Length: 106
Length: 239
Image 1: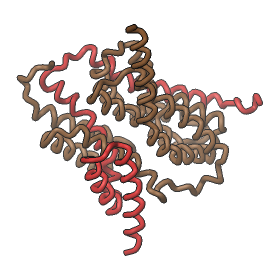
Image 2: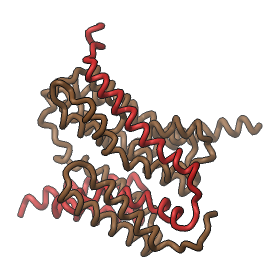
Image 3: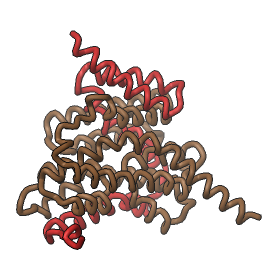
């Protein structure tokens, strides 16, 4: 049983360090906004963060992977204009599978 | 009376968080299995894999770490790469932090421990509609966290059996971009949003084509934010 919990010291150092580094990034913004006043351009910049980050994360997948992913993204976008989030996700998964299968036929 | 109401709101918020995160927990399932299997191939034990998932709780940086994993473990390089991959969280926590001040700084410090992309995105969405409470964020975070720790452990135990598992085969991997598309549309505010999207998307793709690693996320996010700041009316004051 104790063998299960055996851990290499370097592995432990890596894991704890990675955890600390991640936590620092997750609270850095919290600390930052306590000292920066939110007006004008700062405020506009901060308001743009959600859209800018979301797009940056998925851009390579939806625009630079292949036609199937780009088509699935367009279908998902149309679904998002009228359906709730859960239905949008299901539409995305099904259309990605369908377009991937469809494009292998050509 | 007000205590009862507060408790009820807390419970409702927690439950709504669990409901909203459910599809993402399912979508994360195959990804967690694959992560566990890859970690086992690199020689991490089941316990080490689960410890990493529990302590780091950031899928992207964990995959990058496993990619660079060698013996002896290059721990300083791994810590630095985790920081770079997660640097987007600085912007994300600043944005969500300004919308969740009502829960207090102490609770923010706890809730933001669990600020994985999915938890953050759903919290932003909620903050825009009704405001995101501590209970709501915990309702999102706990199922997602437990699922990630347990299922990466399962993947590690199954190890070699899962080596050929490919989430993209069924389209499950597209759940992640799909939810992000859904959330982006929820933030839509006309042409200005379109310009931010164009700047962010182009910068991310251009960066990814020329620079290895996860820099493209920071590049795209920065481009979008700069464009937004540039087009903002500097005389408009904050509310």
